[in-house]
Image (spheres, rainbow, N blue to C red):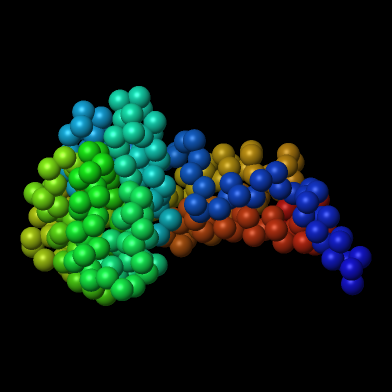
Length: 275
């Protein structure tokens, strides 16, 4: 048994299939995001006032799962933060509301993003909000809050927190905050009150499904760094792209299919990934 385990571990360590499988994970943000140039430019133009110490408009990003919403938002924010004009004055917080699914937990995450620890339980939500408000104002900075899968939070807890965050600038004296809401529920706005919709929906960016050729191009770019040369049969990428295109153009699914195909070949001791 020990020998068999050693063989398994050795095959992985000295993989003949992968250079770096992490490049196929959904949370990896590449240097370029092909076929999302329009959305990147739109979001960049909306957020550009941050570099002049001005508050940008709040935004909604719409699109089905795997259409690049989260990746594009993170990509643009990272580019802005690396500009010399930012000089540490731009703060960001990313919260996935599928997991941080209460007002308290979202606010706790926002506090953590500015260096304030909040206990997991034990405080009133109003107190956690107050700590965030005061802490952010002390930082004298502009902050962008990305609320991913925001529909889950609103459906569970209502939109009171969203209202507070979109109105927080009336309470801030030295800092500014804007909100980017991300959802794959195209009917999400039906769950919002008019007061929140008018504040949060200042700008809307739609992410259409990827087409099969676009998915094929995305996979081809990742393959160069993720797999060893020549290990993929010619039809592997087109097949993964076609299958994912049928699932509403989901790039995450396409990458997952390609990674799993490689891992199956690796476990079977093969030198190539075949159809």
